[in-house]
Image (cartoon, rainbow, N blue to C red):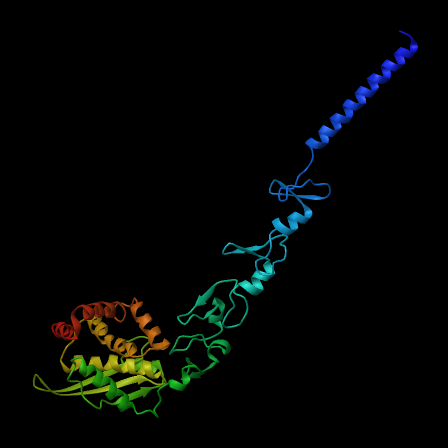
Length: 335
């Protein structure tokens, strides 16, 4: 083989090797080609890996990246999830969190929801008092403020216009309640029992010889004269806390007049039967009013766990629903 032949032969080998290398590089490039997991197009520029998938930057930002369900802007970094929706922390705090009905700030700590649906930070209970009539938190935003009466007693401005004072005809209210009880079968409740308003619970509790506790709203004093072993006269005085909401005032009177009924009939049952029976009086009054205060008081009575005023009442109410007033009065008369 001459030199020229050898040269041609080597050139052909080089050409073949170069073509083979070029084909291998093309195959390698095809093997390593990235494709977007959203649009399936090849990726020639910047890309983003997310959740073991690869995306064009534009595909990721427009279709994959989390967006705030409030402002619809992309979410980077930490975020809040609420009811399967995603929010920027600022959007969540300023627009999604409930607002305190007392101060207007977002509620992001312990809170209280009252019977009326008012929601407020728990720490406000250390700053604001509650209304002794409706139990709302007394503040500008919820009740438009309130007043202090007789020391530690507080009345909100929503209830203030409806409180009972000595300017009201107490005997007229008492007679209205007495007639309601008579219709139920309590026929011998006397007329014109003196109603005396007392400004504070300390005084009221002293009148009861400290027997009724700090939440006392009313007390009935019962006196009698005997001739030998026979009672010849009975006298009553009903003491009621002043400045109660008129509905609560009626309810307290109903409770105390049912005590009068028991005294009139010389009935002295155990305390759970006695107070449970008498608490049916407020129930009658509250059921006659279709408003939030009456309904809130009924709710409290049915959830009270006091052995006499709560559980005793609930037991008597079950018997009342089952047997009616006539049979209930017969039951009490036997106790």
